Amino acid sequence: MCQLLGMNCASPTDFNFSFKGFKCRGGDTDVHAHGWGLAIYEGRGVRTFHDPLPCAESPIAEMVSSYPIKTLNMMAHIRYATQGAVSLENVHPFTREMWGIQWTFAHNGEVPMYTITKNPQEENTPNCCDANGTTTDHMPMLGKCVKAVYHSVGDTDSEAVFCAMLNALRAEFTTLPTLPVLYEAIQRLCCEIVRGHEEKTIFNFLLGCGQFTMFAFSWPGSRDGSKVWNGLHYLVRWPPFSKAVLADVDYAVDFNETNGASDRVAVIATKPLTKNENWKEFKKGELLMFDNGLPYSRPYELCLVERCGRGLSSRAIPRGEICPIKFSYNI
Image (cartoon, rainbow, N blue to C red; front, side, top):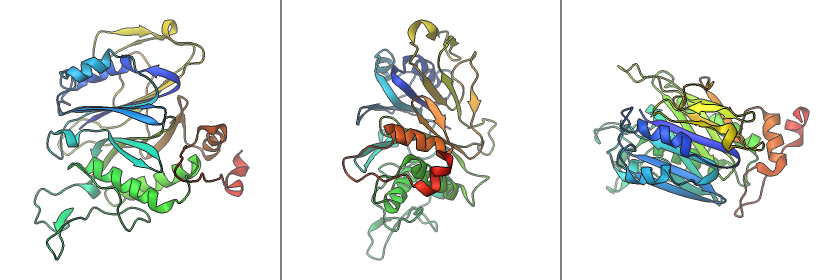
């Protein structure tokens, strides 16, 4: 399986410390040697790096690890290929524009609902031909979607499910959803993806939707015949800061010496990156929204974040309003 790294911050912060340990797992201290990628939000833009080489050996990864890019929101992925060839098009994170916002997605696991069958003649194979011999995309639709706008470039279930989620969100909303409404919609889609395949599905993902906001979901598990547990963990670093010691390389940083009183950073990872901090594992089926370096899941919390001006921002479609009846009792 793959591994994920995400970071969401209260003030612009570089990710060099976490990435220094994370990249070792890409072929050095662990087996995830089939490519790696980064997506780093900078304002309304997103800077991406992708490489099919092992992260531990990649010159690009070495450059990035010593280049202090500061961001409020980023994600990284190291790949262990279980679907699709070792090639650039199958390297996460995947990126699409929707509603004038750059959406990014990285996934760890296996999603039977979107697994591409190896034999193209098998029934229900995702890619087949219509009556005219034209190749068509038969990936399942989610939610209210009846016609896909977003399609996979590569061959992974991860990219397929990302496109399906965006297609469903695009079909449901004509105005920019508020954070509590978007949270509920993503939660419904996660339930729909898992339903009927609860035992076989491993679905851990990071979903970035602009410079402030990241969603993280975990449906953990182990592949058949494997003892490796694939889940998701997080921690929040805030004052008073302390020393952190990486688990994969002999390196430590005293954040009390490098961070200020206004700094706060949430770090999300498949497995804890440090060996002396208290990481919290996601519950099965838990969806968290990260903003300003903190996790949120309750409707009233999401409303407060929205009212602080931290919701989705777009020049393409009008903004929706928080329903005063549905959420007023919690504010």
